[in-house]
Amino acid sequence: MILGALEAGGTKMVCAIGDEKGVIIDKTIIKTTSPDETMPNIINFFKDKKIDAFGICSFGPIDLNRNSATYGYITTTPKLQWANYNIVGTIQEAFNVPIGFDTDVNGAALGEATYGCTRDVLSSIYITVGTGIGVGFYHDGSLLHGMLHPEAGHIMLKRHPLDHGKSVCSYHENCFEGLASGTSIEARWKRKAYELADEKLVWEIEAYYIAHAIINYIVTLMPHRIVLGGGVMHQKQLFPLIRSNVKSMLNGYIKTPEIQDIDNYIVPASLDDNQAILGCFKLAMMELYNTNSQIK
Image (cartoon, rainbow, N blue to C red; front, side):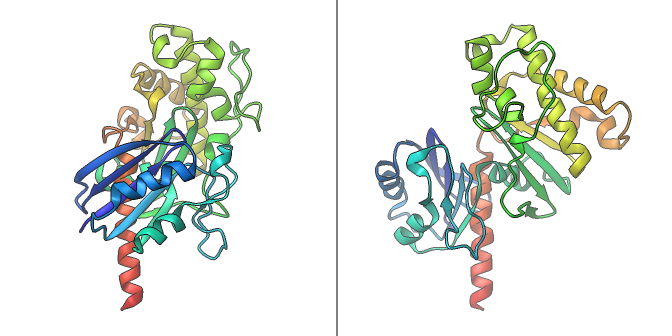
C-alpha cells in the first residue's frame, strides 16, 4: 500500500510517501507561498507514485463537515492567500483517490497514538507550541470534532504577574497562543526562543502559561497522557518546570496514577517531528478502508 501525506503548514508544506507500517519512503519540503505557486509543486512530487490514498493535515481553520459545500477547504485563515481554498478538492482532482483530512495538530495526535508515545493509552492530547499553538484530542480511535475542530490554543489564561507584554493574538488579549507561542516569546523578549535558553525568567513565565492551559485540559477532558511538541518544546528545561507547575496548580484535587507518575504523563513528542506525517498516513488508511467498505 502506497500512502501520500501532506502536512500543510503556513511556512512550509511537508510531503511524504510511505506505507501502512509508518515507514517514510520519500519526503520533501516545499515552501508555502500562494496556492497557485505551491500546489503544482506538491502535485508534481506525488505524480506517478501510484498513491492508493492521501492524508492531509492542514493549518486552519478548516471545514471538516462532510455535508458542507466547503468540506475540504481552508476557511478563515489569516494567511489570506489560502483563505477559502479547496485543498482537498485540488488533490482529489489531480489523483482521484480517497483522501483523509484533518487539522495539522489532530494529525500529530493521531500519529503519536498510532506509532508513538500514546499507543498504550485510551486517550491523549497533543499540544504544539511553535509559531502558534494548537491542540489535538484523541480518544479510543477517534479524533475530537464538534461544530468545528478544537481551537484550544485560544483558551483564556490568567496572566503571569511578571508578564507586562502584549498578546500577539489579533483576536484575544489573554489567550494561550497570544501569550505563550513562539511568536509571543519573540515579541516579549525581542529575541527568538532558541536564543533565550539560559534566561531563567523566560522559561518560568512560559512554563506557567503551558501548565495553566494543561490544567484546563485535564479538568475538562481527563486525558490519559499529554504530549508537548513544536519548536518551543525543544527547550527541554521546560518539562520539569511545567510538571512542577501542574502539580502545584492542581493542588491535590486530581489524584490518579497518571498524575502521580507525572514524568510519564506530560511527555515530549516521540517521532522526530514526523508525528503529523505519520498521522496523515493513518488518515489515508482510514479513508481507504471506509471507501472500500462503502463500495462493498
